Length: 599
Image 1 (cartoon, one colour):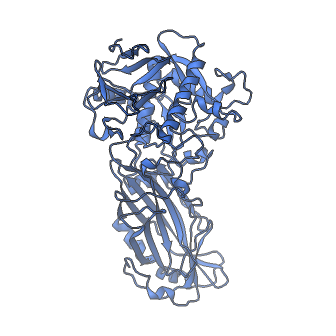
Image 2 (image 1 turned 90 degrees about the horizontal axis):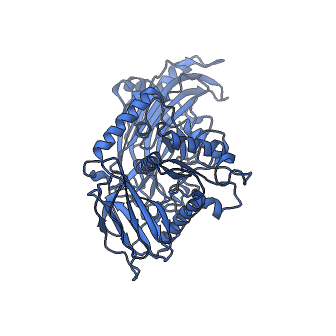
Image 3 (image 1 turned 180 degrees about the vertical axis):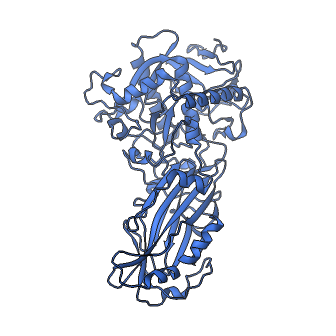
C-alpha cells in the first residue's frame, strides 16, 4: 500500500492482507503483510498543502490573513505571541469540522513562533475497477512550536476520531468493511534541511516512523500525541539559490527547514510520493534582532497591528491606505497614486507589502552593502524633510510619514521607481503618538524577528502589512495594562535577551534599535541606547574608521533615539526619558559639538 500526493487523494496501490502486524515499526519498513496481493486496494483521501511551505506570494495577504491567529479582543502583542501549546487548543482554533467521506478538509493556523494544522481525512478501500467499497474517517492534528531564545523546535502529532468502518455508497464487496480494519497506516514525521542546512545535524532527519493497523490506531489515539524535538543550533546556511533563502544579508546566516507529516499505507514503489503536509521554518543569527539566534514559521502572516488609542497616527495610516488621492504631497498631482501596506483584502494597498530597511553596520564603513542601505535611508529622510516643510502644525506636532522611513517602501521608493504608482503620505500629528508608534514598530520588528532584505526589489518572505484593531473595551484595558508594565520596565536594566552585540563593537538595546545620519560631508554618525540606558554614539573618523563609542550622558532613555531634523549638519535628536518626557540634544555644524540634553 502507498499514498501518492496530489490535490485530490493519495492512492494506496498494494493489496490489503488479512493479518497485519499490530506493533509499531520505528525507522523500518511496514509489515510484509502490507505488500501481499489482495482483491482490494486502498488509499487515504486527503488534500495535501498545494504550495511549498513558506511560499508567500506578493499580494496574497488576504489568503494569509485567514491562516493567522485569531484577533478577538486581544492586543497586538498578544496576537503576535500566539502559541498553540496543546492539541486541544489547536483543534478548537483550526478544526474544519466533520467532512463528507469523499471530501477531505485541511485547516491551518500560523503565528510567528507557532503553527497548528488539522486534517480531516478518509481511508478508503476500492476494488480493481477503482470503485470505493469501504471507508474510515479520521483526524490528524499537528502543533509545532519554535522557542524564541534559541533554535529549538518541538512538535506534537495526534491521530484520533477514527470512525467506524462503513460501506461506501454502491459497494459490492461485503467483506470490505472488515478488511479495512486490518489496513496498515504509517505516520512519518520528518525534518529536512534545505540546500545545505540541517536538522539535528542531518540533512534529512526522521525521528518518528510509526505503523499500525487502522484498528490499532483507533486504540492508540487514547494514549496522547506523538512527540518530536529538533535543534538547529549548529545548522549550516541554506544556499541563496533556494527562493525562500534569497534576498537576506549574508551576515544573517539564514537557514530554511521543511517539516513534513506523511501518511503512508504499506510500502512505496519508486516514483511514488506519500501525501505530505508541510510547514516551513526559517532560522537566523541576525545580530540586530536579538541576543541569540532564533527560528520563525514562514507561512505566518506578518501584520503590524496598530494601537487604536493612537488615533491621530491610526487615522493617518488608514487615510493613506484607503484614500491616497487625499494625501500630501502627491495625492492631488499624481492620479495613479497608491500607497502600500494594507492588510485589508482585495484593496489596491494590499497588493504590495512593506519590508524592513536595516542599515547593516560593518567594520568597513565603505562596504557596499552598508553604504547602499545608508544612502537609501538618507534619501528617504531627505524626501520626507522636503515634503514636511510646508505642512502646518504647532510645537506639539511632528511630521509623520507612511510608509515608515525604516522600510524600503518609504518616501524615496517612489523617487527611485518613478514609473510605478507606489508613493507615500506625510502629515503633522501629535508628537507623542508619533514617537510612541515608532517605538511600537521597532519593538514589533524585534519581537517578530523581522529581517531586512538587501534592497527594495526583493519579493521577501519577511514582507508585512499594517492593520488596525477595533478599540473594544477589553482590548483597551489590556493595552493600558501593557503600557503600565512598559513604564515600569523602562526604569529597570535592559534585560539580557534584549541586548544586541554590534559588529563594530558595543552592546545595545535591540528593541530601541539604531539611528543613523549621513552628513553632506560624507561623514556618518550612529546612535543607540546602551545597556545603561544612556545614549551612545559613534562616527566615522577622517581616517575612515569607526570611532570608539562615546556616551551622551544626561538622560535615562525609555525609547530609541530619533533624529527629528537635520540641515547642513545641524542635527536635533529626541529621546523619551524614563520620566516619560521628551528630551532633546542639538549638534552645531560649525563646531561639531552637542548641547546637553534638555526639555
